[in-house]
Amino acid sequence: MYRQRGVSLIGLIVTLAVLGFLGIMAAKLLPVYLEYWSVKKIFAAMVNNGELNATVPEIRHSYEMRNAIEDGQSVGGRDLESSKEGGQTVVTAEWSVKVPMVANVSACIDFTATASQ
Image (cartoon, rainbow, N blue to C red):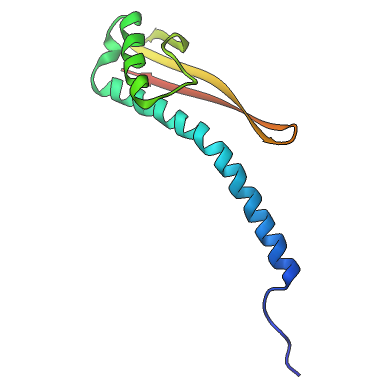
């Protein structure tokens, strides 16, 4: 007697539903993380060009110019916090993003990006 092998219709539907749900969640969260990575990229470029040795208004202006190119919307120049630690300038940006997921369920994500020279 031979046993049948393979995927049942119910198993296939459940698997596709789970994969579809995960795909939709990833599509909703991807833009938020792309913006976080663009802020990190801007900070890295500022460190490489030595722009963190400037005054606070110059640092904010430099960030604003780079952010205009990257088209970031969550973090502006006024959101940057500058401090001196051990003779080095440290620039930090902290922000939260609320992403609606399904019905009245939302994902609240907190980001922190730091650069030091």
